[in-house]
Image 1 (tube, rainbow, N blue to C red):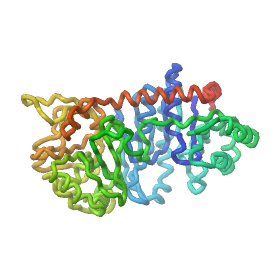
Image 2 (cartoon, rainbow, N blue to C red):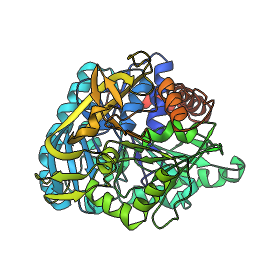
Image 3 (tube, rainbow, N blue to C red):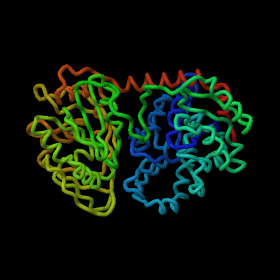
Image 4 (cartoon, rainbow, N blue to C red):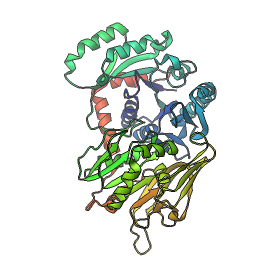
Length: 488
């Protein structure tokens, strides 16, 4: 099967971005290509049309390729919920929590899922673009590897190695990574890409010539630092507001924040000044407070209290401010969260913020659904007419009197709650702000007079096109296209 793999010298070297860009380049050239990441560790995820959960980056890569995302594009997804453990998602569905050492023993089963999914993609698509994870030079993780060279060796595919020059030491990264690979793995690396270069390329040329002479492998291109490139992050939290708008929106950067891509439309909105409030930072005044999703609601709720958020939210509400809670954030607004099955750690119960009359119990079966619906705000003659779409990823089942006033209606069914005073809006729906009309309505509800429409989906498309244009201009696409040939 024609397959090409991108591996990185470090995390955040640009693997996800390069794969997304190449998927779009190949699509523009008339090729049907599918993205694939054998194993991903991330708390940003997406729900696929086939009813499973994958890393957000693979969903974006599928969009770049012009195809529907599938659970087989990311067969193993690890969602950390403690410092040493994670929920394991296998081919779209949770098999439970495993500690790091237990997962090491589980790897043969994970490998079977990886190669089953790879075979399924190969049967459906003529070309496969694979993304590695972390670095192939993490020698402590080499045994049973399914994320990098372990996959490449078994699939017998060529590899491009990418390094981030903005981190410094780019030649050491590339040469050192290569040195820690076996002879067969070194032979599998067909070339290098250097990412995020700023300055005059002439000043780098001597180093590029040395690298090619020393390793005997070509530099396939040097990508410039793309200022203002806005693509959904695989896991890393992006910087604060792109625009210094007058409408102030803040969100706590929870230790286990999940699906923070929910807030990209606000971060990029021209009228909004959005910022994450990090550990030990003072909590500024704001017009709107957002409570994000969480992979460990009890732990993150305790963290909120330790940072002074409970008092800050109460003061914010006393002065007429608005609060939106999404998924785990909605659960925190209730009276209590119960985890009798130990879904997010040891079985436990936690006292919520008590701002909405509801309580939540976590259940073993996770809800995974793409949804369409309408906002529950400002109904006209009993009909809510502001459309929205999004997705649900949660284990919680919430009950309580607050749910009698729903925040949204999804396929006609109520979800979430709006408080009696109209200051609190809570829902399980992720992607709430992705629909331009819903975003505009929610900003106006929160107090932004004359809120503009803003289409994050159009921005994603623009950014993918910009990325593809950059790859076409700065990479040896002829050589890369040649690498995408049968190896087995």
